[in-house]
Length: 309
Image (cartoon, rainbow, N blue to C red; front, side, top):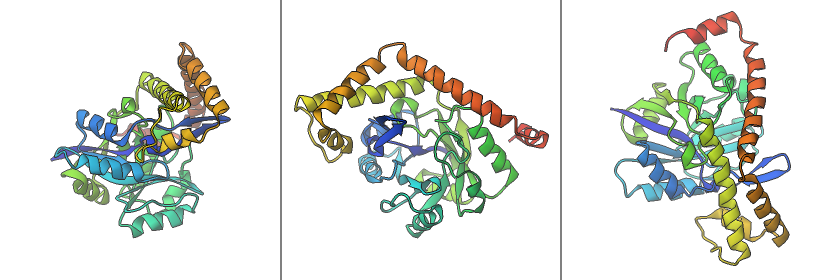
């Protein structure tokens, strides 16, 4: 039986991201919402891999048990001293900022599998050349969040140069429902155990494509609007503190002046054409850098990439 899994998905539990002096939620999507959306997209397995946190994965797994058409795997995207690594089939949270070797050892001690997300990314923390010497079960050769021309191409090239070394995975790296469902991992088997066996047997295949640019823009607007609404409710004393919503706890402790500044900034950002102009500028930078890196490929590399699957 051929099934689909998304092996790298984020929720509101992924915390706060940074872009220079700017701070923003990585996601405002609740774990239950992500499960509901994954079912609509006909995914059979959903791996919740929040940044340095397993709380959202446990919430999603508990919620998904009422359905017979999807299973949730407990995961975590761990920030190590050497780049990010995804642990799947975890039993407890793994601390951040350890060495990559120590982190992988902890993943394996829990019976988990270690995956290199966006292994050759040039714009997010990645393991890059370290992947050759690590005890990894798989690498992402299709990361839906990487719309630049280089990152996935380089991962695909290295996978072909080292046949049998890793399972190759496809994932959305989705931080909102708008970006989940465009890329996935295909495998023979059934449910979470079928996926696990396929990864260990190196019998998985990526499917789909990177997220369309308009959906990426929508994600940024969704995050800004979602955070803005939470902050406004907090100022009006209408924001309930919920155990299943860690972002609300962070909002509550913000000074009032920062809350007001954040609301003003959010309002300015969502006014067209600012989000579109920001996206165009970002894509232009990514493509310029990607094209420069692609020029470093040899003729042999290009020939290997041109070979059929």
